[in-house]
Length: 108
Image (cartoon, rainbow, N blue to C red; front, side):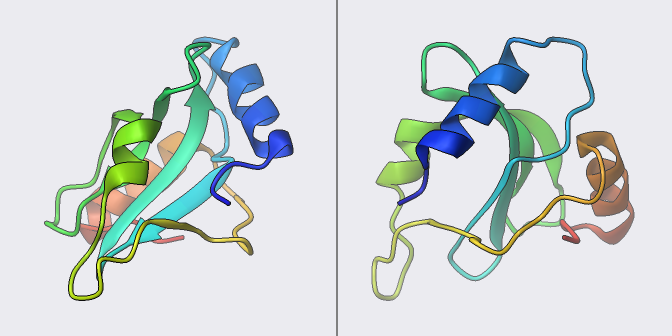
């Protein structure tokens, strides 16, 4: 399960507080190097904000669709994305983004 009710509630709560540097609520991963740190969700229940790293050395802050993430399948076994159940944020999204830009990847 990618979104628990508690995670979804926190993401929606953060999404309603604009112009705030939130800590990520969840970490998603897939394939060999794809990672997303997600901090907010819009009221549409699909549009999320976070730090996205597709493993190409250019992590960036931006918006991503939950539906699109759930539709991804990674070779060679067509595995879906997963949530890191043990992830606990210890920095704000800006701090994670600054570190990711320095290292060309998300360091979590």
